[in-house]
Amino acid sequence: DAGVTQSPTHLIKTRGQQVTLRCSPKSGHDTVSWYQQALGQGPQFIFQYYEEEERQRGNFPDRFSGHQFPNYSSELNVNALLLGDSALYLCASSSGTGGAGSKQYFGPGTRLTVT
Amino acid sequence: QKEVEQNSGPLSVPEGAIASLNCTYSDRGSQSFFWYRQYSGKSPELIMFIYSNGDKEDGRFTAQLNKASQYVSLLIRDSQPSDSATYLCAVNWEYNFNKFYFGSGTKLNVKP
Image (cartoon, rainbow over all chains, first blue to last red; front, top):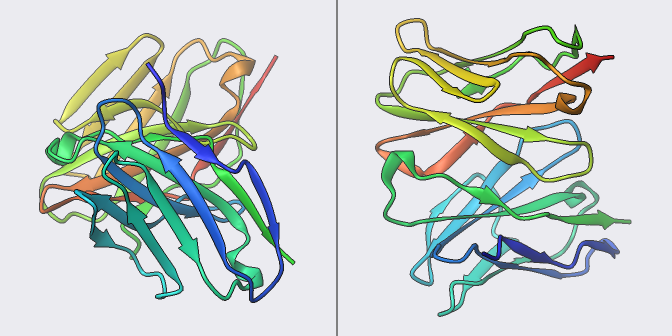
């Protein structure tokens, strides 16, 4: 049973550039959530995709956008990168109809460094 | 007030002891709670979840929920050096179950 996968593992970008991160959910899951985790902090919710639409969004600027494909995989795009965007980006998959007890499982993450 | 708060630690316990990790939260109705373990440089791993008052046991782990006092705890019995990690508490609410709120985590050190 394949777990959540993310690519790339590490990424180094320059300020002002754009980046795309990718995620494939766990088998049987149809919902993908994206989180940003700065060093020493807990994950911060960016947004969630279900049925190819953004269902929920956290307090992140419009520079952060996403997409979900028919096979449930997802992309996170960040435009006009800032130094403060340097973080571990986590993808979590879950079942969209699980309700409050719905568990989220994380992928290995993408470490983004902005110089 | 933040939705979820945790003591950042570090919490140091000797090998074989019970480690007790706590988390407080804002009361906004029906909630579910999740404990994740995160090793340095790795992603969070789900270890327990609880949504009813009382205790829930899974191997060496026990989650405790006290809604009246608005706290949730994770007990780790017979702590091992391999349990040394950061433990994250997360909560979601019935009215908005898609969105998880995480605490900043408590770092646990288990000394041999």
